[in-house]
Amino acid sequence: MSIVSRDPDIQLMNDTCEPIPATTAGPPPVSKPEVALRLNNLSAWYGDFQALHSITLDIPKNQVTAFIGPSGCGKSTLLRWFNRMNDTILGARASGTLQMGDQDLLSSRTDVVDLRRRVGIVFQKPNPFPKSIFENVAFGPRLHMKLGRNELNELVEWALRKASVWQEVKDRLHSPAVGLSGGQQQRLCIARAIAVGPEMLLMDEPCSALDPASTLAIENLMDELRSQYTIVIVTHNMQQASRCSDRTVFFFEGRLIESGDTELMFTKPTEEQTEDYVRGRFG
Image (cartoon, rainbow, N blue to C red; front, side, top):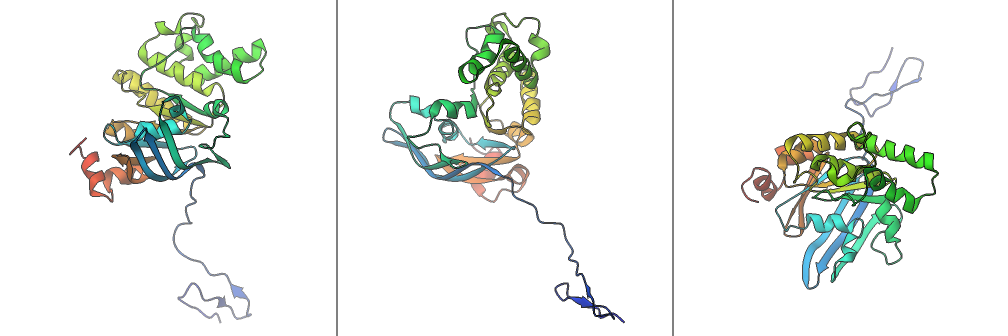
């Protein structure tokens, strides 16, 4: 005869006095994604103007994180601290910590050249170098790697394929990159960024100057790249953020108002200010 208990925490015994394993209902616990970048109490200034106020945030690895908020809320400022692009702006400074693995990216000991290889960026307006298509992609690898001719050719082809532009440019690799369409130029810039083997890809309004067909191509490309790269995108396009991202972060006047799973951020935000923004009531 077996002893039966309705309490799953009570060990059951059968008539041979051997334990019967207890089972518990419900789905297994969901593991948290690995953190690619950890921000703790990050503030930033341009001269006397404080652009960011005590931002604490984790950027998950191999996901797309969208930064949303009205113009001037600090989205692009924060993005450009991730690879220290703000170092080039007179009077720009930051406090707090910006951690990638064991390295604080804001430290004066950080090798900024290597950081910009590890954290690539694509800007609002496509900015190909005044060189050939091939030389645009080969520029970074030549700077950071020692490759033979065949290896370099293979890497350029790989990057262009990865950026979904190879089929369109393979027969004119040595033609000027500025002769490409806007959407092709932007995908070329993505190929240029990933050719040096980054861990993270930053996109600052990458589709704002593109037509709908080119925008769709970039969005499809982000979906393909997320398995290999951590992607952070700044966008004013709410539909784009909801389509493309796994997580969304809402900023207002230099402060982080709310962050979370994208679907929940757009359907059940916890902050009234977030709901007003995603519903188009301001911004």
